[in-house]
Amino acid sequence: MSPTARIPPAARSKPKEKTMKGRFAVLLKIFFIGVMTLVMLIPTLFILNLIDERQQRRAEASGEVLKGWGGEQTLSGPVLVVPYLVENLLTNEKGEKTLQRELHFSYFLPERLDVESSLASQTLHRGIFRVPVYQGEMKVQGRFAKPDLSAWGVPDEKIYWERAFLTLGVSDLRGLRETPNVSWNGQAIPFEPGTKDGALFDSAIRAKLPPIAADARGFDFRMNLQMGGGRHLAFLPLGKDTNVKLSANWPHPSFTGNFLPVSRQVDAGGFKAEWKIPETARAIPQSWRDNPPELYLPSFAFGADFMMPVDIYQFTTRAAKYAMLFILLTFVAFFLFEVMSKLRIHPVQYLLVSAGLCLFYLLLLSLSEHIAFGWAYLAATAGTVGLITAYLTTVLQRKGRALLMAAVLSGLYAYLFTLLRAEDYALLMGTGGLFLILAAVMFLTRRINWYEIDQNKAAPVLNATAAS
Image (tube, rainbow, N blue to C red):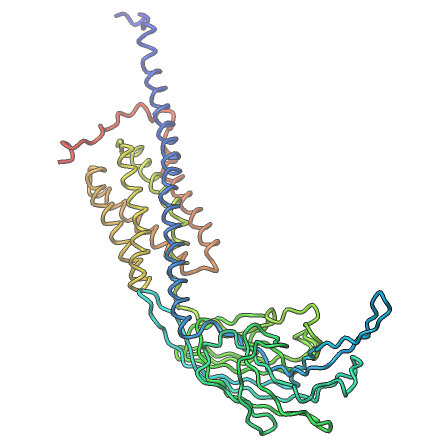
């Protein structure tokens, strides 16, 4: 053929057709990666639902334990209750007059309230679940001023001083280890169940007081409570000046409520905390009639939660939320192997590897219920990376490539573990990690000519014969 001979149009169009087919194949593979990532959202959602179910089972087991031991406790009071009589003269339509008598109640808070509690804590088991519980002595003492009902226009002869009683709110009465007594101006008075008329709290005990003398100036009280409970202990600041000292041999407290302790000490042997709450900080009236005026007393509670050192379900949930990112990054790594190593990886192989990645979270969940979370994470990582590496040794045709992929996965799991531990910096570390990953992908692919990638002859898809 002479140099000037013209190339037939059909011959010129073949490279162009190959280029178009190759470009379409690349775009199709990218589209497939996106679709497969979304498809793997389904097993991820199943895993998250399973974690929720295990959390609910733990809550049920915890409730069963606390039902027999004593539940979350809130100590409220004591409060002095004084009944009085209200008389109203009513006139009906016929002009007849009748005298209506109603019994009302007035409530008075202590001038000073001091609580000192020393608790011994432990964990009880229900199946594989552990529940933190406590029991110990609570010393409650303080002083009441003599009740004054004159501000409400109640005459002294309408006040039932002989029917006054003391009420103490205990949120779960099953936690009381013995029937307590109150020392009222030196006189010992036993408590009894107290959800009768005039009860201020849904769950309480009450002590019938001796008649209040007209010349009385105040009343000192003291009581010792042997009480048990679990997970949480709170107090209401019902004293004009409230001082609470709480100590326990539990090294993982979380101080909660409207008031934080003014001093605290937490170490491996337990914790000590002290609260000082003046009248000006609590916004609770010192006395009232009938129902508290627009006041919800439990909202002022403060205290401590007895936390487990590691919430495995919280950690596993946070880890599972990164599942889609892990699968996508693994698919991206596969795609880069295809492009840079002239390999062809079948969609089924993508699917099997992503299934192994999802299995990691089931391994983590099941193992962490029986061993420490750190060891469970290490075992789940080793199992998942080992499984995928053994599979990729054949898929990627070279052991070095499989080991490189194992290093990538190990780095990702180590990075995830760091994110789980550094909760306060998770967003910063996550953003920084994604930035570095994107930078690495851009660096590795900077010399790839995406328009000509189709002209490189790819390796055939592995089959069972080649694999052997």
